[in-house]
Each structure stands twice: as C-alpha cells, then as structure tokens.
Figure 1 (tube, one colour):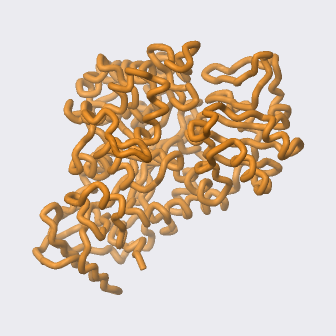
Figure 2: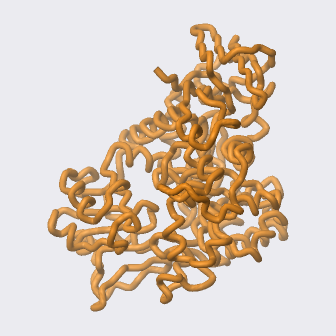
Length: 525
C-alpha cells in the first residue's frame, strides 16, 4: 500500500495505490489509485519497500509536455549546443572545439540571429575559416533553418543553378550565390547526407532527456514528428522499464514516412503510437511562417507554404482511415487557415468523427475570422506559451499590428476550445513551470510588463493546460490528469503550492519527487 497525504484545498488529501507485482514488464503494468483518505500534514508516501516523507510538500498530478522532441533534447544536452551564443563569432568559437560526431560531420543546433546584435543570418564564410574540408551543419534554434559551410554545399551539389525546392529557400547573395543558410525544405538538400545516429546513441539521447524531464515534474510527453525507425527503440525501452516518462508518439507524416514503414497505432503503458504529424509552414524567426499578408520587415515575402490543401486533406484522410489522430504544425495566419479549412472538411464530411483528435500545433497567428472554427469543429489548440516570451520583440518586427491577435490563449479558452500546453523542447526550455509562468504573465524574456495582456490566462487554467487538458489532447484523460480513484498514479510533490504562490515564487518552485505509475522516478536529494 502507498499512503499519500496533502493539506491543500486544491488537491486530494490522501490516497492509496494498488501495485501489480505480478507483471514483469513495467510497459504493461498499470498502477492506479484505488482509495482516497483524509490525512492532514504534508505528504507521506509509504510502499512495500520505502517511506517517503515530505512535511512541507504539495502534491499535483504529473505535468505533461504536449509538444516536444525527446531525442532533440538529448542531443542538445550531450552534443554541440548554440542556444546561448550571442553572436556568430561565439557560435564559431564553440564549433572550433567540436569534433566530428556523425561520420565526418560537425553538427549542432541552437543558433538564433535574433539574439545577436547584428540580427542578420550567418554565412558560410565564417564556418569556412574553421573547417574548409569538414562539412558543418548547424540547425537554427527553431529547427526550421540550417547554417552550413561551403564544403557541405559542395557535397550537396548546391550552386548558383540549384533551384529552390517546393516549400524551401536557399538564401542567396546579390549575385545569386548560396550564403550558407537553408530554410525549411531546402535543409534536406544537405541533411540527408549526414549519417544517422546508431540505435545505442538514440537510446542514450532518450534516457538523458527523460531523466531531465522527470526532475522538473514531467510524467508524460507528446513526442512530435518521430522518425518511424525510432518507434521500436522506444517500445523496447518501455518493455525494459527504461522510460521514466510516458511517451505519446506522433510519427512523421509529411512525406508519408509512417506509411512507408508500415507503422500503425499501438497502445502501451509507457509508449503509445497515437498520431501522425504534418507541417503547413515554417517558423516566424526565419520568415518561414506562412502569412495572409506580407511580413512587415520583409515585404517581399509571405513565408513558405509546405503543403497544399489537397495534399493535407489526402494525407490526413489516409492517417485517420488507419486509426491515427492527426496534428499539423501551423504558425502563420495563412497556415492556420489552411489547416482549419482541412479539418473543417474532415469533420463535416464525416471522415474524422468526434473521437478523432484534430490538433493545430502552435496556433500562433490566427486571424480573428478563423477562431470560431476551433470551437465549431471540436479542434485542439496545442500551444507553447514560452514561445510568446521568447518571440515577442521579434514578432513585433515581423507582424506589426497583427501581434494583437497572435498567441490567442484566452480567446481560445473563452470559446471553450481545448488548449493544451507544451514547450517544443529543445527549442525552448523543458521546464514546465516556465510555460505556466508565460501563460500567466506574458512577460517577454527579461521584462516585467505583459505583452498584450488581454490574452493572459489564470493559474488554474495554465495548470489545466499541462494536466487535464494535455491528457484530453492524447485521448487518455479517462485515466490520467486528476488525483482521483481509478486514475493512474502519476503525480509530483512540489515544495510550493503552485495554485496560490506568486509568479516570482512559481519560478523558484522545486520538485521534491516525481512518481510515474506509483514508482518514484526522481527524488530531490
């Protein structure tokens, strides 16, 4: 038996958990709440082997990151990271210290020209000085652009005659020569040449990432755009009890990857394959988000459309017919409109019943005329609040007065739209409290004044976005997200009452312990 007690009005006072000792594999074991008792005075957890005492603890359901990239976080933690670099020069200094990892390539991720004084894209020339004969491939922080050296361009056969691929852009100088930055689909011209990491490396990335997630109160993650070849690795790790967080897999679908590999929906306690992921546009930072009107700071473009209406409709239909849910990346206003129109068609034609989740990933710039579609057709808005804090000043340059209807969290919630919260890690921090802080303050990083404060949501709503709403957005809310009898025993003990603390206290709050399926996967020493 496990006894857990709390004295917060916001949570269950205490409950007991039953453990299934007959199952050898944690992947098929379900530990659930089977009784609730009243007990006042901190938190105490007693199981067959150990007693955990947290006299000043506060218990909440486990948090869920509704949009993330697990392997990407592992790579960020273990390999070349450029996220905090404040200039092109600093990026190059870090690259100089990096040895080739994948074959003969130097790879890394995290550069962001918006953090630099110049605010301009880097070029191949600075990388050429470091290594003219070793190919270098560095992904932008949002994953929608790559910075490469001349040797990488040479290996890919990219020159002044190379045509931009559909949905991609080779950035060029005034003479038509590639500068070394490739946007969206143009990235593949180089990236497909890089040797893939081994299965053992993928396992290491996954374990490293999930260990960090457990430390910050995450018990479940919606893993986005997962290559089909990774799914068996996840399944094996789940069966071996090596996943400290539950994983909801949304497999790659833009180029029919799931179909080519014969992937179908699959259930499991610690890993489920539940959906297919598509992209309708790129990112705002690289001018790749597809807008209805031209960029304020780049009037020659409206961004990049990565898929057509007919393509998304056909691909989504095929996925649904095979039992999958569907989610689509949409940042710009034109991209959101396209996705919403496709989803409207899927619902109205009966292709997608109400049981099929239709998610819009990011839902960042939604024209006011399109908001009602979310409610009318029972669509999910999967948002990453921390993007607002990091993007605010950049978004002003890109969008001008269109910022007023960007990142429309409260507007969507007021329309009874299901909104779930995530981080898009490794692009942003994997710490869920930072997302909740952004939901409740809309402070741009380094500032203390709300950005379009009419879209701020309450603390209660923000926590729901990371708990009950997140589980609804993966169709598992009947099992998880609440501290009630019959729910799975996924919960977190905090040193602070997250419902009542100030915003400053929220950022200082610490996880004392994280439990998944009744098992302690992290305990603060």
